[in-house]
Length: 259
Image 1 (cartoon, helix red, strand yellow):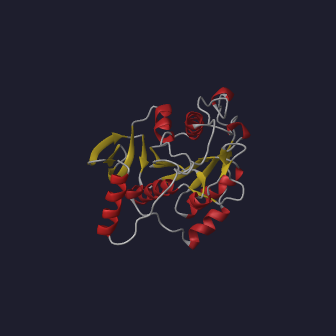
Image 2 (cartoon, rainbow, N blue to C red; image 1 turned 180 degrees about the vertical axis):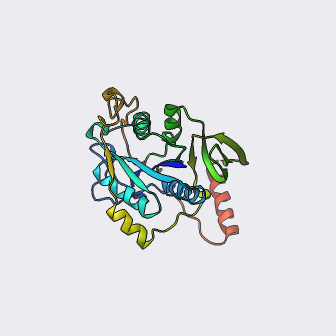
Image 3 (tube, one colour; image 1 turned 90 degrees about the vertical axis):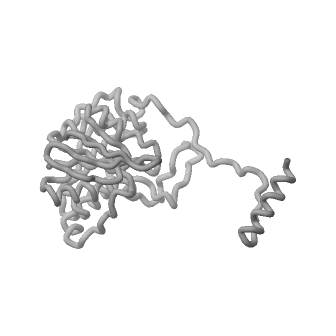
């Protein structure tokens, strides 16, 4: 089975800052990590490969330094990494990103399953996975919490719902986006790290994937961020102390005073 995993390099959430001049995330001096949800997609892909055989190819779109998450993926069990990198991709929204990833997947070809994290922690839209499935005309399931059965022809999964879960069976090829409940990502072994260090990372440009210049980057993005800001403090705040019962009494008294 040939599995593709889409991963993204994102700023570490604990160090996120906003650039007041550009209204975008300030990335300079901020540590970059693999998107946490994507770690679970990678782990599930490697686990399926170990059961059924095959290969796991990890794909990321980003600047040259995004190669780091590809090597990290190889250290954790992936077979190869592909970096989709070009200045023309800068400023892409989820629509343009899904187009770019789809063109890259079509260029690489021959997959049975695509796995993505539910969402990226820097954008939190959860749109790229479903958008990629739409571009490739694939059946897909979002928010997968468990893989029940996998064969060369189909995959059966549990989709997380507010009141439980659904059991769905999809023909392959297909696309899944996964949640953190699906597994516990493994730690890279020394052997894996040595393999990752020596691995040759394939790089694809806009020309390599045959991308339409009007469909990538800012030119291909129908949505753009106009302004990003930190919320203003909401006036006076009061902290209640004491036992739970005492705090409840204080809260009730406070609410009554404002009626």
